[in-house]
Length: 449
Image 1 (cartoon, helix red, strand yellow):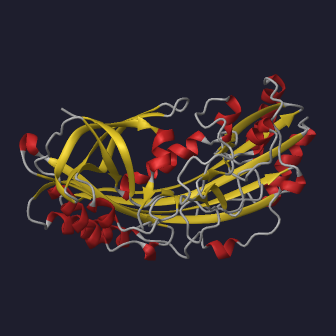
Image 2 (image 1 turned 90 degrees about the vertical axis):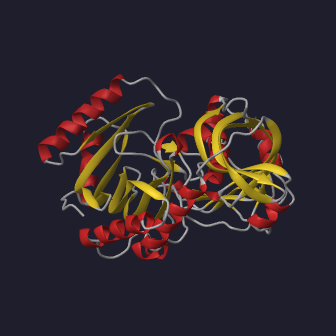
Image 3 (image 1 turned 135 degrees about the horizontal axis):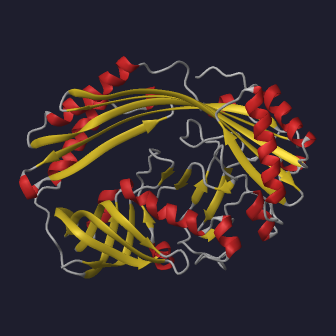
């Protein structure tokens, strides 16, 4: 981690300066981090980068006006200027009747950061990252039929977040993460195809074997050779776990408190309604052990907890920070996030759909004709109406089996209808911030030839 003298005492002194300069309330977030990454292509090193940095964000509130300023300079003179600028901006800002820091009763008081295992001890050095990237690309290129490589990359990083406010909140936590990825090509000329594989984890010891990642990337690439086009039809669609999380992501966007408060969501009137089948549960869990987006408290110091967004098919809550909750006459769900230079806004943490009981193989068995999607291109999703249209590629399903690769397809429907017919498989893994098992959605419209 970069060395810093921005202790909690100094941050609290900064808040005291802001109040002395005319602020009614203030909060500050300090983010410092270190990252290291390497990349190679065709066996040659292309990148070796290390970065260390820190940013301080100060928000001041005067009545119902607020302003945020940020700086990477934490000298006494720079902090004095930061306070002066923030207060001057807040005085001239438009009024926001819903802004404000948390009431002390809403603050996180007891939490066990160590139990979350957010940060692995030590540092992954460059030699280890080089070893991972090299092994991964070599494994991919060693597979017969692979003709070129877009390269492999391995990286590690650690960050520490400190949050303090004039309501008495003052705490910090650290997190780490590592990743390995590779992308290779097969075929020649206009018949070339590419694919990739990737893994990430909070603890580097939880990463998959780099050789396995490389082999899987090669296998996926070779399976995509000689894709066909298919005729337009209405068929069942299977979403591979690489893309199934996007369906859960569309839900989180639709129930984001900011959009609900503005009245711009197709689920505006759906609270308490059954919008999925009764066996569907979708959960946001900020306290998942070694979760990629786990945190002991939210960006406003508000207590957070595991919540069912969808429970037995029923929409149970919006995703809210303090501001959107006040607009809706509700309480924050502890989902605020922010950067050093931005205001808080609602966002999910470790979001996932519970797995079902059927295997992906059995899920496909009864499909005479259908589409198995492994990649999505572009996005046209109307958040107001729920209309859905996305480019896709993958494999055509015939008589219950993957028959041949297909490309240049548009998949369309309406998210309200899609949510109702989602069926999850039993293969949930936690690989991203948002995760879902293999999903089946019947009755999707394909636009092909």
